[in-house]
Length: 168
Image 1 (spheres, rainbow, N blue to C red):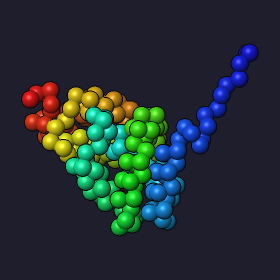
Image 2: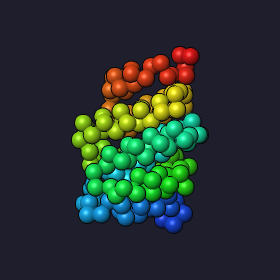
Image 3: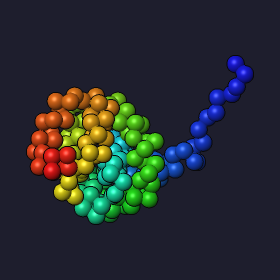
Image 4: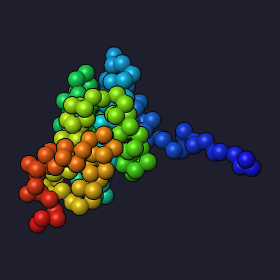
């Protein structure tokens, strides 16, 4: 071959993902590496859904903090610190890193945990009172990326049917 494959620069291609991982490690002390990767992936997917409609609203931020507060072993300051890292790097995390986060969950999480993550992502999309078409499309892509089915998505989304922007 006459060309060289360019390797991505870690310092420019994944600054947000690295920062998110650092914050999670700081606030999730004692966790094994797999648990840390799962928490980073879930947090990253929360950012991707919160920003799917290009508006990370105050209601969505509150829901992200609430959901991160459920993570066993995360310090009391952890949810806010992780959320701040998500806000600071939301564009990167919600675009280039989203496939990596989904792949991490497929590799490390069982089906039940992936279903729970999808439920939380749908709850987050509904947090501001409306699930936009952009959010629906993004959630459907994430469903497939998480190795789940359209039926899984439909069942979890059904309780928020009244919030679908397309039906208003």
